[in-house]
Image: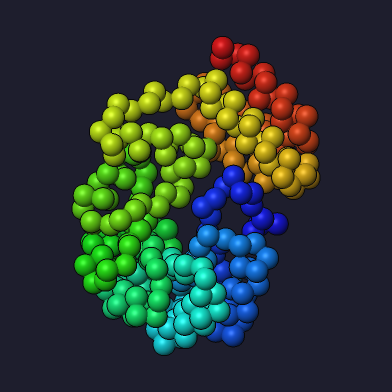
Length: 268
């Protein structure tokens, strides 16, 4: 269910993770045969303990020979699909693997690298060291995608300017704010920024998000998944905090839809 997508969403990449070259090889082949993604991405970036304690995600950066073996296995398993890598800068500050990994992955046949320049031990704390993105870019001819601490549209332009990266990946800044991409694109192209969405527009988008989750995942899972999204959409207007709490505690989709409808009436 997490992998399923529609052709409307293309081009799309699917990410896999694991600590065994054999398992990753078979997983890559299975994913490509069943779903036909445009890109297959290897996760060497996840710092979550339930992943790293298995030797997967960013834990692979502790053993670059294992990283090489996994990457080779995936690239050889799906020669018809571009394989990319998402990674962190290393396990901790004493084991930074940038820029060494750039040439290694390029030689294996990886087509692009996304770097989140924090270590596994940092998790999401501290600052992302954008200098490492620049260092990685200078070490290889591969396209480098910068990631980390993109909080506002201006940060997108600044990352391009400071690192020379080829693309920027946006994560948490887009939560509850799908307008972020249009705003960033306008700023990057030197055009005027689109207006900041008002409360009515935010609520309408929140309702649309709920509708899509209900459509794709059903009521039980859809409403549960939506609860964590309310915190991102419902903010920066009077009584937003109490509304968020009511939405999170709402018993079903009807209650959620009623609450969203009421706040729209009050802010028209």
